[in-house]
Image 1 (cartoon, rainbow, N blue to C red):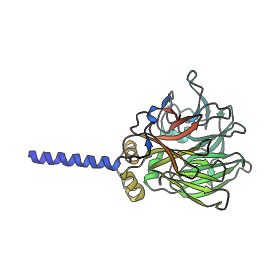
Image 2: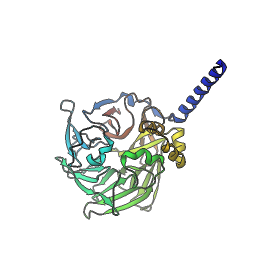
Image 3: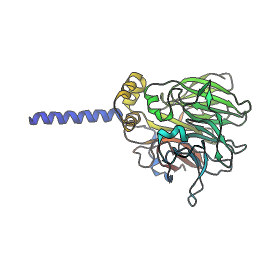
Length: 368
């Protein structure tokens, strides 16, 4: 082959590869502090995907739900993790730490919240709906498994209003299951809902419809509004519960990536965990659903689809927002040295506990 032709082909290949990397590469945030790589790691033994974190009213824990359907409790470095609860009794096949094809059988606990009045743990299980288990753990009791006559497909997160005895929770999609989360995002699905469960009447009220991947939930400190993460659009929606705007919703914050869980700290500020920042290609696909649907038709594996969605190499980003939705702090592990694909950031006693829906560990970052 002609040497000039070979050189031209090599140069073209280099330019193409560079262009693709540029399209995939997530943006650099000027206000970012690349400190999360200093976090301490708490490994999980034989488990993957601690998506959410919760501490009981006595400060014990954290508790976290993992990919094989169990909820685990951390008892400190000497004792480690113990099994605390499960969301289904059908556990015979649930021996693999990560088996998405069995999630509908084993359950996939996502959002966790304790009721501080009685110590009950409320669980958003992606396939089994909204459940509750008592302070001693065991088999959880189903509370909501269907809405409007249809089974919940992707229950995601929750928060509790202990004054009104209601629970706000999300159903990410009425068309896609949790194991199809990439398809939900790239297809432009907008069937997500924010709902309210009344403990006394056991009734469910749909508060918001048409959400693009309804995800994390957090009630404001004064209970005047509730936040819901709309992952596909990279924004947080605020629904007013009290005051002159009660019943209306607006955009609380627009973010540089895919928001997962939202957790309020003791000051009333909100930590938002980003599954990843958004690169140019993934942003283009989200803004133009036909692009995403075209990508889904390609013979790409889950790993390759995820790579396109997250904008290349793994990384971690947590953003703290004020009660008005302004960015107060950005913490990152830009190169994914320690943390990556985070799903929740919980501030407690000067430390930030960091969860991940895909990794086999939790992280603890010292905020002071």
